[in-house]
Image (cartoon, rainbow over the protein chains, first blue to last red):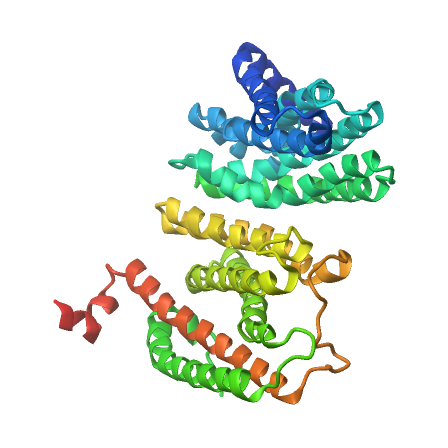
Length: 227
Length: 247
């Protein structure tokens, strides 16, 4: 048996999850449609004045992204849990932390990356300037991986529980608030003519911090859930 | 002489010890509450800037301190339970959570009552207020997670992991008034001394210790119920005198 390198393992897990998702496109599309719909409901709710919409655009897009990523979280491990694949992953000689990291990356590519790509279109709906749009994409690019990583911990903790979907939001949303604050803050800073460097630096620091700890914590949570 | 340091880490022995300790802490809390409220309301002078409304701090400040401190203690117990697999640690973490949530709620509520006359608003999205609100959500999440898992061993471990992850929020609350220069005032009591009137200090100290005693009494009382609940099928529980009286 040939030994798998860490990156080989990561590549395998990511490719497998992406392939599975491609066979069931509806799941990915639901998240995206939900994101667009939530963001589009705001102008209907608060009125169509461009001045106000421009002001709240970054916050609306960020909150919608946060809710959309909550929507896809319960699916992160549940399919593998139900058909027994997860048990095999736990038994595998490779590090579970690396496996979980692979699943997180795949989850981000399926639920985070599409949001980043479609966000400029939503931003245009809200009449955002080109500069603010660029910052929105950059901030989402830094922020959505954090949402996937924190979400993985919540999804692993609530695996197989009744009403896990609501519980995962209760556990994950409080921890995501800093991402929301600094992500929306970066766009806010650009629109008001200030530098967004401090907000982006903090987001980057959060991402590195989460990258170091959350795969390990999520792996431990999976072990607890599978006992 | 060999001391058995772990004698009281067994639920069996701790149940009795906790039962003996609860009345002492409860009485200490009651007496100190009365003393603190008396000094706070009748002895302490009126504040030069904030007039009478400042008196709400006598409950607001201790509640805020305890809400943060209890979270750390809870996370500490949770970590102990996770690492050493001691059953009592996990039970203590579970017993601490409702009291911590209560203090976080009192802190937010009294803060709102104080904010209305001082800032002219019940709620401001200030860094410290927001992070304290997150703390309340973390407590509620911990309680909800433990409540929704049937198997108590799995519930303990899952809750422990969540408590440890959530503890990153506590330093954020603590330093929030320094890091973000927003509406909430900075701390008056520093290591270099304080500018407070002596009677205010006494009232604050009495209230702080009273809250501390109350938290300990409540936690010990609650952990006794948790022990009984989890060990209901063991012989030692069935041999307790209080169980015999009921049946």
